[in-house]
Amino acid sequence: MGNEHFSLMLNRQYLGVKGESTARDFLRRHGYQIRASGWRFKRLEIDIITSYEDVLVFVEVKTRIFNPFGLPDEGLSRSQIRNICRAATAYMEYENWDGYWQFDLISIEWRGDGNY
Image (cartoon, rainbow, N blue to C red):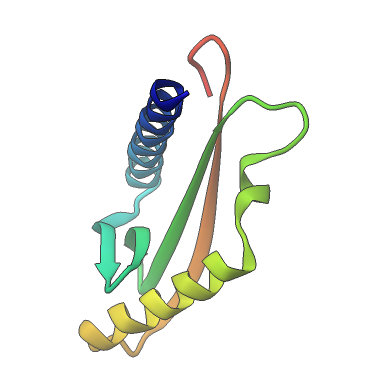
C-alpha cells in the first residue's frame, strides 16, 4: 500500500504541475502577463499571479483526470478560498498594490487520451 500511495502522490503532483503550466500558456495567449507562479506567503500559496491591463489577477488552478461525477472546480473548499485571500492580501501589501484586483479559477479536466 505504501508504494501505491507514493505513486498516487507523484501522479497528483505531476497533474498539478502540468495543469498550472497549461493555465500559464492559456493566460499568456490571451494577453495576461505572468508576475509569479507558486507564490508563497508562510504556508499559503497562490498558483499564478498575473495582470491584465490594470488589473492584478490571482489564479487558482484545479486539475483533475476526467471524472463523470464531478468537475475540478468543485474541489475548491472554503478554507482554500480563505487562504488564497490571505496570501493575496500579503502579496498586495508586499508589492504596495492599490489598484484593481480579482480572483479567477481555471478548471482543467484531463481526458483519458491525454487531451483536456
